[in-house]
Image (cartoon, rainbow, N blue to C red):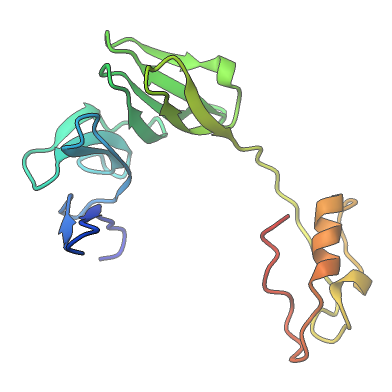
Length: 188
């Protein structure tokens, strides 16, 4: 149904698909538990559209709450072998950082990872964390006469000076013969 998402597992040998989660919730960003017998995931389960982290055994069973739903945006939980848990979290200014619950249960922000850190994963011995840093930048473009012009590179753009990457992308994608605008502008 709308605003519902479930997590599944597929057996690559038999191609059998099994539901890991159920119910009218939005479940996403799964990862295996360290023993490989369950999944850890984020969910709106019981939180009035706020995210919490949960664990459930593959094959069913009860849902275990790892971090209760609250109004702090937290995403992409990944477990460590020691029982630690790492995820990305947004602060009050909507800056994204890595957060960790140590095996002792202490919660800390890993500010050393920097702003925009997400999708963390522990190394096997938990001495390192692999992650991506996303730099959020929004560019607004207005292209005049897109349907009738020969290409976007000759089109007047009303914006601040475009990045070199965007200019190259615009030059690489001419409008096709049907007069449609380019379809692939994601690579900016």
